[in-house]
Image (cartoon, rainbow over all chains, first blue to last red; front, side):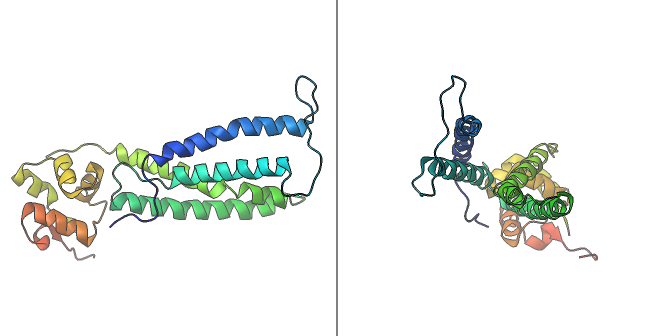
Length: 150
Length: 66
């Protein structure tokens, strides 16, 4: 069984680079949100509805970077990608989707005042993170299987 | 389904890792097949049979519960 639609093994590193590259952007955005940075310079951008608004471009790029990073980490091949790994991958994906929708439905009931935008924003990356955590855990356990020779 | 993979390996005197390399899977996969935790695909079963030069039915045996 040949694995389809998977990135090469090394692309996982690129995924981590994308996530790490996002961190300074996040810190920068925090400063922006505050309005002033530590040395008292005004950093708030003017409100604008234009698509070429620099804050809009920064936000869109940062979110795209994180999603691309997570996709690369989630769907890059293992060193030896055999049929059992594919099976574990599929199981983890199913688990992650179930878990994600469970959290989503639970949050609908337990969050008052419906911060629906926040819940949806969380769902930009939550399923991928659930999948990555679950899959890495399963692979970790799989690799720790005792070596029973003979 | 049960299998006689461990016995066949002992007869041929090859390790799990060597068998894994011959058929292009990870050693853990051979391990889980031997301990009946994982049922290999037809392709993988045929590859294993080819290594031991025996028909698939001699290595993988259906049980009543299957």
